[in-house]
Length: 166
Image (cartoon, rainbow, N blue to C red; front, side, top):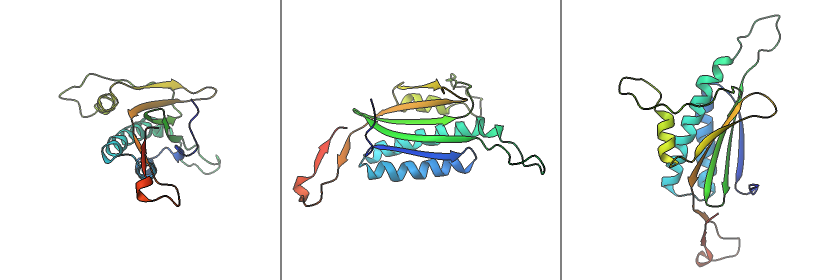
């Protein structure tokens, strides 16, 4: 299904630590503009933070340091895409590393590795990944149930406001 341009947003980022903050800020502004509920925005921002953190942790580690005489270093990129399809909010994060995400069983003594468990729970298991073609990398995607409030069109009264499932 092709997302409508009204409910479709793409943010291209350098895959570095600040990408998490920018991805969350962008998603917050976009999802509120789309009229999503506070609960859904909160869940979506949790998912965005986890996907962006994973992209930075894994793909951002591939950044090349600057060395005079070797030209510009390669800075890995990542990309956040948000869209509404049918009754789902779709969130996707692309990064340049083809290594698939790994859903590990939770461990009481591990300091990390719980993020995808959280994503899995928030999405009721509606998540996965696909390798980029052509080119390097992968896209991790998540779907959350979504109902949006469509703002009234210019000239309509407040009574003309309607709830639409997109």
